[in-house]
Image (cartoon, rainbow, N blue to C red; front, side, top):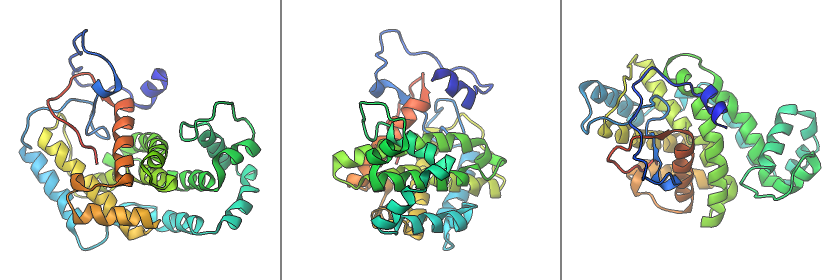
Length: 301
């Protein structure tokens, strides 16, 4: 696993962070997440945003508050999102008929098998055939697998700029986040598919924020301040809220989007946002931990 992560996310030419003291426990709760993991591998430095950071925040906030919907910042959304909505709004019998065709699509078949073996379903036996996989994940699981296949190209479109630099990280984090959010949603009383889709779509908020900076040709130069990190996280949450509200993918996601853009993001409560927060934090700690802990508590959503 470590070798795979090193290939996906090679170390940058930045000074290494100071190691933890030997007596500090390395439990999941003790691992500090990298708050700006799409664009940095360094701990936060300082409290107040620098002049350059303030300008970047002005650009991003302008996009968040603009009357024009931010969906235009997501390149393939006009093609991809209608396909996703059509799939989600088919009745169970139509979706069941689609399941018969899964084996004819190698990409979808691989996604179904991978999902059936994920922690989302906690199966104790090995799943190695399509019939068993479909029995395990059911109709909602099939929809989640189709959503994964449909949405992945959004994260692969632009190989340039901040969005291009972050694209692999955004997708790998999003897949893990989706699985964790789907499982957590069930325990909190929310819909499993809503949780999975929220985790999968959540990083499009990052994509929109970074695309805003790309369009304005605003560079980002780490290390970043704590104030900048938290302001960017709030902007990401509001961008995500505006996107899912505009797309109206499911009623649950639309409600969540409305709450994120009408209230302070960290003040929003409920089972779905609770599942997303927990999944975001766990995925970030797992994939992008820091060995030097800044004196700051993170609320990633």
